Image 1 (cartoon, helix red, strand yellow):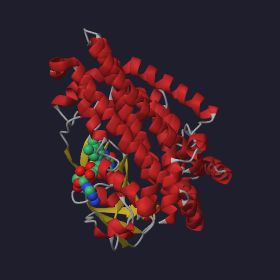
Image 2 (tube, helix red, strand yellow):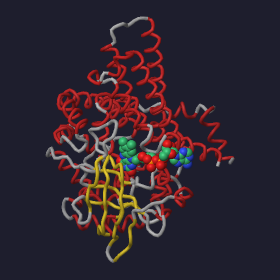
Image 3 (cartoon, protein in one colour):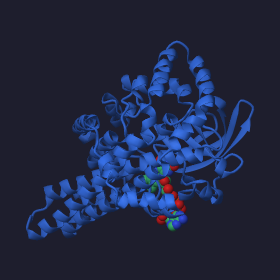
Length: 458
Ligand SMILES: Cc1cc2nc3c(=O)[nH]c(=O)nc-3n(C[C@H](O)[C@H](O)[C@H](O)COP(=O)(O)OP(=O)(O)OC[C@H]3O[C@@H](n4cnc5c(N)ncnc54)[C@H](O)[C@@H]3O)c2cc1C
């Protein structure tokens, strides 16, 4: 209780957060560079995106691989991969600036790249990271050849949404049906996931499954070519249509031991770490959409009179606040959260060694990586759980507030245009449909408020 009260006073009163939220100049330069890349990407693919958007409105299963291919030219699929493996080593703040820019043009396309990064995160935060060197390098090498490999993050189930994204207490009550059963040499996976972004187009999916009980959850890497894996329905959702949300079916899929990402029992903690790293960037998706709506309204509003001035000023001030929230939160994540791990000098050194061995012998890195993972896992999990309550609380605040404010901005933009706003051909209502989804994924806004309350008072 006292710990929660201290955290509460820090959030509302202490200058610490403001001070620590001043980003280092390095992050700012990187963010600006990535923003420029996103702009170039949009310029090059704008026409294709428009066609993709309208085809996806008609057919939710339609996917244009050309857009992902254009993304490979800019290195978008390797951004979050550590530099030692040939990736961009991009942290939460620059990444969010990048994703915000993409989403100002198309939230669906932004989310194709965002969901890919989310799918990779369990591997990047795994003590067995080094045993996946060959897979990480596959993404990087294939990207250089213009061949996109996408990842997806598989957690939500038909009977498990908010409750499977929480701590052990909630998990105890969760109805998780995807199960991994230990057999010789690996696990047999059975069950179903729903609403998985990129699920129908990903080559690799990081899948969370319960073992003896939901609190003993683990995370496994599934290759979509594995026997017993299939894709079910692709949702016909209201927005962000260019990013598929798919149902995934696992029927006796054999997952070898060396595809275990997070071992039995450790996944609830790591899942909280992952989501507290990735929730604040959802705020950036939302402000990107809101920015797009404001730009559009300025472009098409005929009367820029006093009434317009009042409304647009309100929208601009809400957008400003929304951006500040995720910028602050991401800066703290980068300085004190899970992103610190990849900055650790020893982790960097090991990654460098592994990335070199890999070109010589893939089996060796797999075996060595597993052995090393077994040895370092407790230290790894200890480091990741440090500051968790603080990071999780700030990330939740950024997520529920930025997405709510951005929703209000899109709503104001509709109000400015009046009856014109419902005209689908003007494409202003699309922003409202797109932004609404940001209030749901990465844990609904309501449940994020409960997470904050639990960290402060429970
Ligand atoms: C576009 C989109 C993309 C997605 N992408 C992914 C993905 O890539 N990977 C993935 O794993 N999942 C994904 N999801 C799933 C998403 O994370 C879940 O939809 C979300 O966590 C909510 O879960 P649920 O839908 O089961 O709702 P539920 O948890 O059933 O909640 C239903 C309602 O009840 C409220 N509620 C629930 N529990 C409580 C409580 N204790 N107290 C008060 N209110 C409560 C919620 O706020 C909500 O309003 C995606 C969803 C969408 C819409």
